[in-house]
Picture 1 (tube, rainbow, N blue to C red):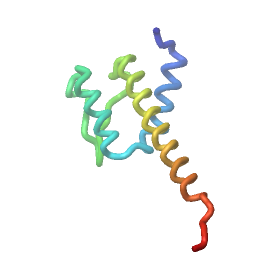
Picture 2 (cartoon, rainbow, N blue to C red; picture 1 turned 90 degrees about the horizontal axis):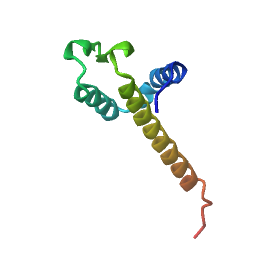
Picture 3 (spheres, helix red, strand yellow; picture 1 turned 180 degrees about the vertical axis):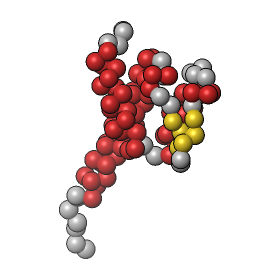
Picture 4 (cartoon, rainbow, N blue to C red; picture 1 turned 90 degrees about the vertical axis):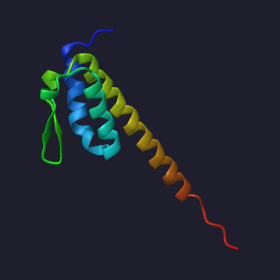
Amino acid sequence: METNKNELINMITYIRHKIGDLNTNERKDILQMLINSGIEDSKIQSKGRGTQIKFMDIPTDMIVSIHNFIQVKIDEKMENLKNFTEENDEPETEI
């Protein structure tokens, strides 16, 4: 399935807004995905405490992969939070 321009823009926006919700290991996984994708090393640059790459240097299929990866991780975090909240909402029994 081909990704149209609007879908791609929405994915990039999602990535930009949600990347900060990932932990360090998950962000390292994304960096490894980028490195393994064949993107020139010169396009991936250290910046401050992290790594930077321009979206225009990332192939569309890699943007889709990163978007899907983030979506799965956020969904997992939400499910864990829901389960944790439900466990703590159980009524206490007195002994």
